[in-house]
Length: 418
Image 1: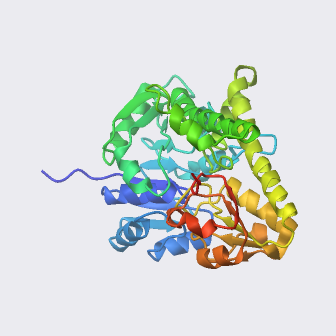
Image 2 (image 1 turned 135 degrees about the vertical axis):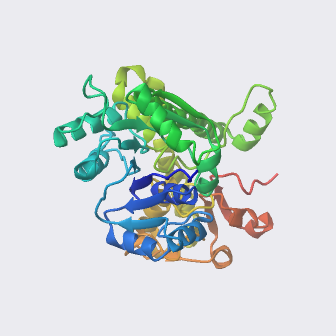
Image 3 (image 1 turned 30 degrees about the horizontal axis):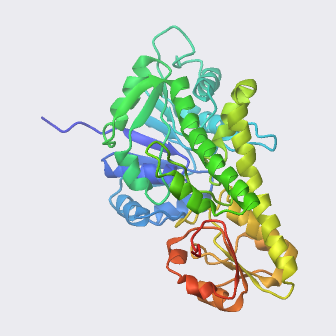
């Protein structure tokens, strides 16, 4: 009996989620075409290289391109399964912007054929999958789109959000459970059948709206928990206690598990997704909105603390340790560390030295500021004010005695002096 023919898959969007997912699907045996609007991204991937940093991704992409199972293009082609993983940012008023998702649907609409499965992975407001169906129904009246008519559907629509950790994406794409929401039960079953070919975690079927809300709830839950820890840090500063000691002792309670505070919340998920829930139900989300306010306000508080130190020491050089939104990655999206360091650089210019092991040059936010990118050892030797913004492993290896005689603002609690 001949082996079962693997479907052709198109991944729309080759960013931090799209490219690793496309590579993992190719490794599972699918022939995968990656679509992206940026020519340099397409060219880079077709050369077997990557344009983002992720553990083991470079080797996997190289191997999948070399064996012919992964390629990239600017223009869509016919396929069996289309997976959409494009950005869903918030506007200035914190309203969700799904224009990239809808544009992706318009992009692939001309090449759709009966029997195709379309799966949205982008974190999205509740109802976005249905919105895709409306767009497709308008552009392709010759096809019955799931959820748009009572007739049996020609195009199956589903929503399946990722839940991965940067730095561990490839492993977690395989090991983590998935919530798979269909516009119809048959759509969910079709999508589940696809994911079960490369996902070892449990694939659970539900409705599209439920799966959309699940993703938002996961990140809003973490945001609220982080806000509690950040608020504790404000209280501790006010009353003169060590917040990390307070949390450590409180967590000895068998039913308490408080997270660690920091300079704010960053990344494209936790710093953004809760606003989608607030926008969907503003009168029902006072807690989530307040947590967003606490976390969004923390960088300003850190800047004010830093300015007190700097003003009191007008000749001191300042080292800012870390720019990424979390430890041991090169992702600066929505990073509170980047915002804090950039604001200090604008005000104090060449007195500021930036230490970030996950970039070779400073981001554009530092252009014309006078701040310099510096190796850790040099910054520690030259600077009298040390501001710890990210808990990179490289920073954890520093002997705390190197801070003797220096002024330390440690937003991560790495170098507590007991």
